[in-house]
Each structure stands twice: as C-alpha cells, then as structure tokens.
Image (cartoon, rainbow, N blue to C red):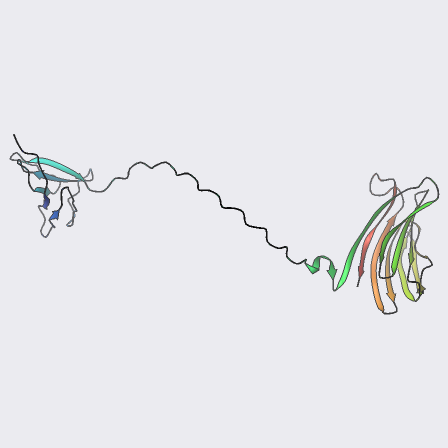
Length: 238
C-alpha cells in the first residue's frame, strides 16, 4: 500500500534565480521571477509518483512519467461578507450647556432701547375708551378710540412739567401736524388729532433727550376685519 503523500517544499523550475519555497506541514508558494501564473490565476506544478518535492513550472508544461499535476491559486480569495454586527449602545446625552448672554443688538440701537408698539382698541358702544400705548422715562402716550371709531393720541410728562415735547406729521390724509411745548407735564397734550395719521415725536427731560419715535393711528375699521382703532409704531429711548 502506497504511503500518504506529504508535500515538503516547492521547487520553482524553468527560471534562473527563482526561489525555493519551504513549508512546515503545509504548502506555501510565491512566484518571485514572474510568469508562473496562468490565465486561470493558478500556479501549476508536478508531484512525484511517490510524493516528495513539488516542482513548479511555467504555464503550458505537462507532467509526465507518472508525476501528478497540481494547481495552486495564485492569490488568496476573499470569503463572503459576514453579517453586520449589532449596533453598540448609544451614549447618554450630556447636560444642556448654559444659555449665552443676550445679543445687545437685538434690543438696542446706538445704546437706545427699541420698543415696538402695536395696539387694537375696540370701538366702544358709547363715549371713548383709552389704553396706554407707551410709558417710560417720564413719557406716557395714551391711545383713544371713540364710539364713532375715530382714533386719537395724547401725551403726558413728569409732574415737574419741565419736559420738552415736539410733534410733526400728517393727520386725516392732508392736515399737517406740528406742535411743540417746553412744559410737558401731567396735563394731557394732544399728540394726534381725532381721525387717522402718522406722527414723529421727540421727547426730552431737563437732563437731556429721552425718547424719539414714530406712531401711526387708524380709525375703525383697521387691521383687516377688526372693528376698532389701530395703533402701531416704534420708540427709541435711552
């Protein structure tokens, strides 16, 4: 009975200076001189009838004299892609950072506080209704709406009655409005005559300028379907 074949080493034939490839209990190979790989990406060799060293030949060589032809893959072949591993646990969400400081440009212009004015005042059944539209720095602007839907504006100042107040604008579509007082105090001063208009005002106390702004007022109906007087504008104070 013939003993099992045990491959000890590969001897490269057919090229000068080719390396002899050794293995311990298996097969290792490399084509150091090139030209040993055939069109099927294999390296071909011949095994003696009784086992022993494998002789590697260039493509086209045929084994004879009872030698067994062998072929080895010239390159390793990748196996199939394995399944994707499970997703690891998500880390805990960190604490929320501290809120940053407010942007001063959002509320100030050249160091002055910006106030946006908007008010809708329903037309009363009788008499006149009134609401404060703006109040700061000693200046109070009151918006009024009478039972006929006509709007108007009044202004009051500090108790000392030593504040300056000037108004310029247009009322009721044509009439120019221009008033000025150096004694604005607790007694109401007309800012916008009855009807509708758009006015610019300047207010100053004894210490210097306090506020400037633009106010528009509309007789009813205003703001679309709202049955009442409308007031809006912007005031800069500081």
